[in-house]
Length: 320
Image (tube, rainbow, N blue to C red; front, side, top):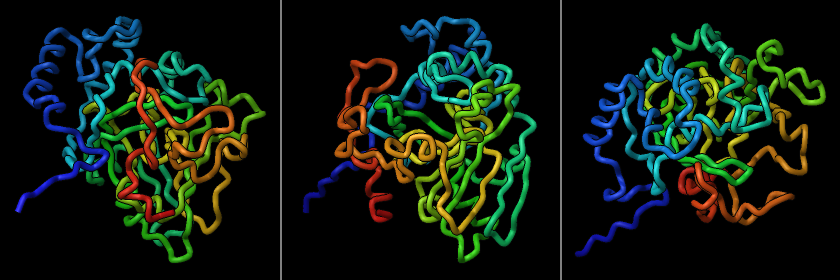
């Protein structure tokens, strides 16, 4: 009997995977040059920001704080991994600025330690815990996920975190809990955009409890082998890879279980354009642009057809 393996949408062919020995030796080579971390592949990048000593100086303290996490081989993709420099210099973080290319400059004074996160609401064991204590208690793993922004740009990133369900099981949701409401920080002295009173600060996002308990849903504390830099939503953020990126709330301070659907930031601000569900769907255009295709950082020349649920349908289609 002939066995034919049909690859899943998120699998990567072996001939496109960087051998581990090459990856490790490249990191050692860069470290020997005095630039720590896998993200310092800037030596091989053509982007202007990769040559910026200010950026390397900003990233270095975070790259030096490595995280010990098992690599989850179930989650990888067929697209090339996004260079860390490109991922660090193209971010949405509206608390600081609406310019994606300058977020990394605006977050330099953002302190992500010490940091506490509160888990409350319809749970039997509410808790408030320091982020580093939480990291020590949770089963960290590295997962390579596709990330798709509603603005049609995309990247492929090795996130480090733990399943949200591991945290929720720790606090034990009550039977009446149906949704998870998440809130980011509010500090107008540091995040200047939060002084804009026309916007519904603080940033709030939400999931159904079933979505939050899904195997894909990850609370992220690291990236590229080390703790998160501020522009990525340090010290803890959400990643729900089958949804548009704005659902993956950054710099979380509060997680509340509730029986009511949360009113979320973008849905309150522009309900016609940003729904609560926000699943990636090439067949449903944004009111102002098509979602049929997406471009992969750093170049708009690297175009790909958008996949339903961002290619993760086998994990999440049953939820809808």
